[in-house]
Length: 152
Image (cartoon, rainbow, N blue to C red; front, side):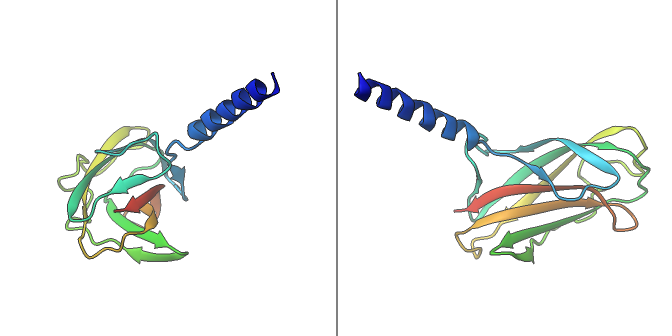
């Protein structure tokens, strides 16, 4: 009886731990908008980190709701490893070109931003917190989202 109880309790705890390990995206300082959904191609959202394979490109889309007008939008991406932020180079930081956004962006509207992030072969195999920002013409974060990831 006691063994059965311990086994049941252990299975319940393991199940709860797995449920708590689902991928979560966190707001890191959105000012004039908010993200409503983040989708990363090939990312297993049942895991606690999104696996980014080196020497590939990763597609991301962010649905945003805007609270202010934005005449221009710039993409800024950093990877935070051991508390140090390092920039991720983007071939197209202008979010108004080839990203699904048509600037100017209007207040009280929703938009879908899409981009491709190159995961370079030279990147080390580490866990990284990806900080993805869409900034307006004044370099104020429209949205800022943190994405827990692991480069593999």
